Length: 301
Ligand code: FES
Image 1 (cartoon, rainbow, N blue to C red):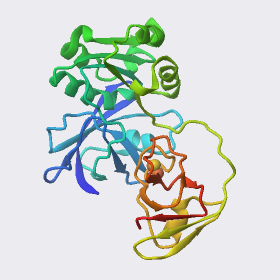
Image 2 (cartoon, rainbow, N blue to C red; image 1 turned 120 degrees about the vertical axis):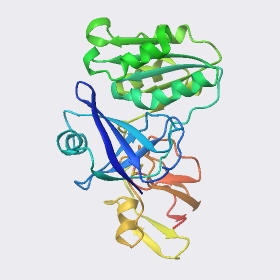
Image 3 (cartoon, helix red, strand yellow; image 1 turned 45 degrees about the horizontal axis):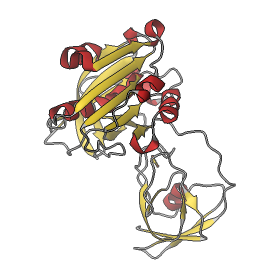
Image 4 (cartoon, helix red, strand yellow; image 1 turned 180 degrees about the horizontal axis):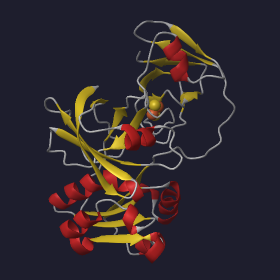
């Protein structure tokens, strides 16, 4: 974790605060699409995308929407966080990397604009053709619209749902250049619409919340911690993360829902059953949600 000072708090739209976190020295580097875990003083940890410029090593910028059904994170930020507060922030992690391309279509919904901002900046600086379609419930709730219009002009389409309706993703897909990659971050209905409209191999999405899916009933399995040699039993009623923590092998965690990547482990042997929404590579797994297909897993602990 890195210690930062909350240097600025600005209201950037209805219900959205921008926070500027300043490090005592250079902060850990990051690339567009990255997020950090912010440890709040109320003991909650929340993930926020970095929206500033990766070249600025002194500050991280995040934006926080006050969620009506807040589970305590956004409410604390909006009601209690004040300038000057010391806050711990993780090193950035990137589950949504920007792949090199000559053309991009960026789709952002509401606060999903935050990871897209540095992507759009990087794509434009690299000389790629980049277009942004940015949708929100109403103009007043959409942060950064003035900056986007002045920086990118007609390469940006801003659609307030109460005035212009939702973006027509099917029409965008029909007009998509065969060279373009699509990056989408926003609420679940927008991600589902994007998945229905665009070819999977060209669509990159980031979720804030897990998708609703059903899995086979949990079964017990064993986890062997390769470094200590200890074997930990994981019962059907508990997560692998909980079992490892109780056995004295705490694993870093953030969302505990399989969307942030904090609890990643390397699988050295055995077959994991992936239940995350990140897309774990074959030899990795996320201990908060994923389980085992084989009776035994060996991990790098
Ligand atoms: S804690 Fe976020 S993916 Fe496991």
